[in-house]
Length: 415
Image (cartoon, rainbow, N blue to C red):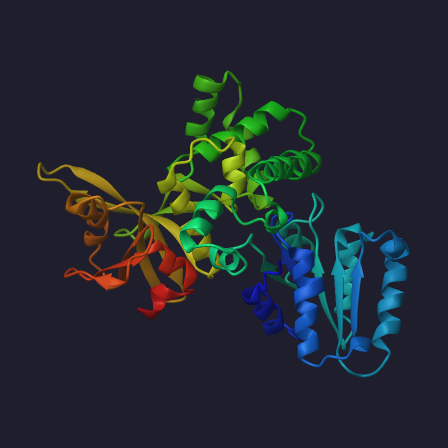
C-alpha cells in the first residue's frame, strides 16, 4: 500500500531552487526515505526532469560505502553536475553516514546547478543539529507519522473502524503491512526499545535505563494533563520508588523532544496575552507509540482524541498552545478555565475545545463555558467525536464532528 503524502511532496516541490539544503526530519521509521526516494522522485519524473539530472544516493547501501568518504562523494556529485548546464537534483539518504557531512553539504551550496535534499535518522542527526551545523543554510521539512486522513486513504472498511484502529495503533507506516494485532503491538514496542531509546542513550551517554524508560511511561500517562518537572519528579518519588532530580527529568524530556517522540504545548494566558511558565502539556507525535508504552492500557479515549487533534493541527502548520482564561466566580474569587488549544497561523487565531462525548445539555454547556469567557472576535470551535455536521450556535461557537475535522484539511478556516 502506497500513501501518497501529497502535503509533503508539495512542500519539497515548493522549496526547489531556494538556494538551501532541503533537510527532511522526523521520528525514525516515519517514512523519510520513502518520501524522497519514491514519492519525490515520481513527482520529478512527472515534472519531466531528465533521469540524467537526478542522483539518488542511499548511504546505507554497502555498495555506496566508498561515497561515505567526503572527497569521493563530492567528486561524484561534481562529475554528475557537469553533465549539462541544467539544474541537477541530488538526494542523499542517511547523510549522517558520510564523514564530515555538514562540511559536505555546505560545499554543495557552492554548486550553481545542484539542488540538494537529504535525510538522516539516528542519534547523530537531529533537527537541533541542523540549526547549529548548517547555520541558516538549510530548509527543514518535518515529516510526521501518517495523519488520520492519510491512514484512511489506504484503509478498507468504515471510517469508524479506521478510527478504532488508528487511535489504538497510530500512524507509523510500517504498521500498514501487518495483519494482526499482535504484530502491530510487538512492532511498536520494538521501535521504542531498540530504536528510539537506543538512539537517545547513545547520543547522550545515558546508562540508567530504568529511569528514562519510567519517565516516558509517566509522560504517556499524563497526555492531556498539565504537568511540569516538579510534578514528574514527585511522581517518581511517591509511586515508582526511583530517585531522580528535576535537572535529570528536564534533560530527559529534552532528549525525547529532540528525537520527535513528544512535543510540548505551552500554557497561554488568553486575556493577559502572555505565556504562563508554570505548567505545560506533552503530546506524543504518534499515539500508537504512547499506547504501546502503557502496554495498551490506560486508553482514555478523550485524551487520545485530544492528542490526535493536536497532531493534526501541527501537521496543518498551526502553532498550538494550551489556553488559560481567568474568571471571577460568584463569590468574587478568581478561577481558571482551560481551553484545550489556542491555535495560530499568521494573523489568524482559533480557540478549540475537544470533547469525546456530549451526553446532555449540561455537558455541552460545560465544554463551551471556557470559550464563551473569551471576548475577542476570533473563531471558537468545539470538536466532538464521530460525525457531527458543522453548526454554529446562538453564541457563535462552531461545533464540528471529529471525522469532518480530520478528513477536511483546514476546515476550521473555511467554515
